[in-house]
Length: 250
Image 1 (cartoon, rainbow, N blue to C red):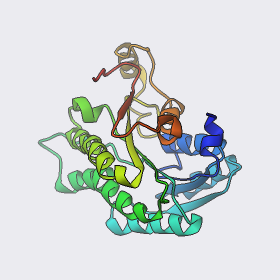
Image 2: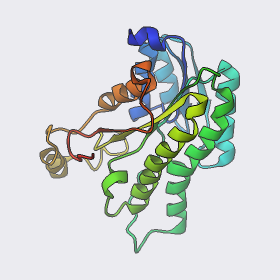
Image 3: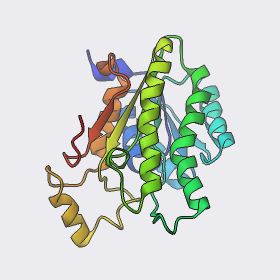
């Protein structure tokens, strides 16, 4: 089985694909000959620069995924443009500090709405566009969803929800031949974490990671690609950890 041949011609919608992990995923799927739906919320210049970097058919879609309507508009726009969605990669999210005695309702709602509730909406709206032959969904969670994270309890709770949702939908959507899996990264050097992952704290994180380094987005994308491909044809409901050994689950 050849990975590029397996995925060539498939339509992939990647949320949050203008930067970070989503961007790395979009580029890797494009290298395998997939048609790419590029989603962004605010930074259209980054979305356009990604489109210039890939040589396959691609279309850019703007949507605010905080709302049910935004999720619906994104999926319908992509589905009608391509005619089908074979692979849905849900990568977008927010990671903001929220001490339990200081967090506001607005901050809590923003994290849960964007990191968890939007997955319900996107999945629901995408189902009519999946072919009868099935397809794959891959969600991006976090080690925080497995072990918790102090000062980010709302984020950890949302990612724990993603993990449970993955397992639930894997069984529910199996009759439709749609596999649902999840990648749980540890620390990844992205725009969202770059300010924190510096200096002495970065050295502490690296020292606590058996592989002695923080991941790049390009370390995460191959795991997503694998789970979306027929190489993982008998894998569903799985949580694939990509964290350098920092959290060992089993």
